[in-house]
Image (cartoon, rainbow, N blue to C red):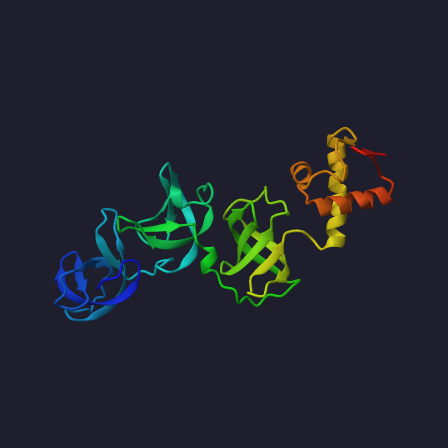
Length: 278
């Protein structure tokens, strides 16, 4: 049986002016065209050739000797080449771009974005891309340890857990939900620090600096916010985590550490309901 979306070895069963027809064997009724410009010069009837089988712009089965950037059962970062109301089209190294349906997107995509997708066959027997279910496909045997700096691609957001990142486009990692991710988009390539390795091999990572460095940055940010509020912040470090995150883009713990630093340096005053710049 011929397999859509996979590389396979097929036999030349017919030669025509515009290419050759391939099949599993000479008795097979299902045949697929290999265009003339991709046919090796010395190939003959009965010869075997390895090809990738997909569908052309008219939904006809066709084969290619070119190597696609994505095959069935795999995931890879692909570039968005165009965006339409029904979905987006991705460059996967073949003449026909790969369709990413709107319902298979986890966030709004734009041209030139690089997004992590998997290949699947839809109900109409067409090859399509999906941004979903990448989490289950990522590896958990990374060589990284706590304290290592890594790079990865954002592929999903979760209000309950955090920001999911594919380190090196292959290893499972997550930025915790209490860390601000409002400036991130799906497809962003980020540099992060490993803060822990779970028993199952998944990585915990952060975009923030080590605590002693980050505290200085956060303290300066609090002073900037105070300036924006004319010197008086209408809440203190006892406010809810939601309010603190919304107004400062910091977790409650990070905000408390920054405020504590400024208080010790006598740069602020803390009242029951506010923080004032001295």
